[in-house]
Image (cartoon, rainbow, N blue to C red; front, side):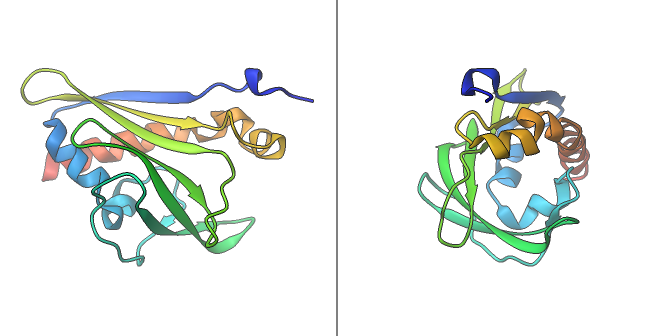
Length: 156
């Protein structure tokens, strides 16, 4: 059996030529997430207001070949304006699978920001950790997400 100590959060970082406030505005607006999602799983159509704090829940429409269309109900667990935002995905009953997504923004000069996306499944059941290879399965999509976020900021 694999222990939680074998599973560590995985992260990808990218320096984006945009102020942290502008990047955070995109991250805090769930309606914009499909525009920069690098996994190819997010779908437009779920309507929400902009996230303003911990405890809020936003719904994302998703598609995955093995599961078809489905929705995730994401509870915000980390929120510091222009610095970090994170959520735990779950189902409609808000049952969690122990995973977390988080974005950290660190200003790098007046008009640039280092953005780090982290996926953490250390609190997930073993079958979840195996299914996502301890988070490593998401690294290519996370890299693509930050590339798309960079491109989106360049056109704003």
